[in-house]
Length: 467
Image (cartoon, rainbow, N blue to C red):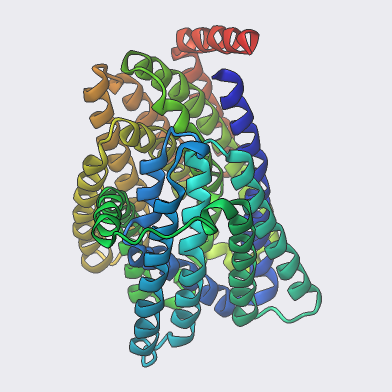
């Protein structure tokens, strides 16, 4: 069990490290050569893609839940193949209708590329999640690595030829995802070549069950995206596209680590599905201690990173000043995606993922109306992002605590205090002063957690010896 988990984790680590490196390159390199307007279009494209996932009706997430913990050889491939057949037909009807309907929009070109991306990404994501759910992490990692490396090569050539444009980047993104879809199809060729079921009332009943389970995850994820999306839309409406692009860059930088963390959560899910409930609480505390100590330590990188980025991207300095406010979101996003949501899926609490995200979305609408349109304060609007994600994480964790019958509220209060110390030291002092003030706060936090750290070191030693 431990050996298999380590192998899966290692494969996912390599794949997502490459994904992270490509994302860092695109996030930091493209803005320097593309200009603010082109980069803002690119950010709008990524922004729309996140919301167009509703078209998939939760199908990839449903497959992930349905196959989670099973061996790849044990899944009924003809059922999966038939679902692919039905969903492909559905996309072939819906996407052209949306393309025609969006042709008169102000950003029609962006929307056209988004719809084309959706046609490729939905089946590719379904195959990747199928492989991850059935512990074929190495195979899914190959698909991710190939797609991202091809995209990196395309973007690097774009910069080298001096033809940095939104159209080229969007086409490169879609074409490399299509290559990944082809590769995933080859890996899962026994599914692609499986016979289609012809008892259609059974097909639609099974597909309905998959969509019902997956839609709760999908709607919950959509609400989670809207929590920050509502704030970003308010920034675009109140302060314009250029301000939107600059703040989006800072958000992208703050979210870089979460790309890595979120993908590792997919590896953790199949392993946790095999644990008994009494061991889930122990594993939860173990993973949380590793995650929190590491992430709060990584916040120290914000200070030198901001100094470097101010020199590298001087035209984005207005947005980069908010790094000290937005950097803590990596802690709360990671805790929610890797820890709380993964355990909620294991405990089949999909409805709570939706309820919590929906509740915080309502709070997002209210706070955005007050700070963006009432006070018309960009500073408070950006700070509200961190506040909302902190609340979302707390509520998500409470549902897991109740199911596993333990309480971590003292740890959460310590984390909130350290977050405020980071924001305060960075916003009011910054530079070397801010760095050393936060370092002092972090060291005090480690002293307070010394018993947990000792227990964590002993547990890691035991696992490594067992391996």
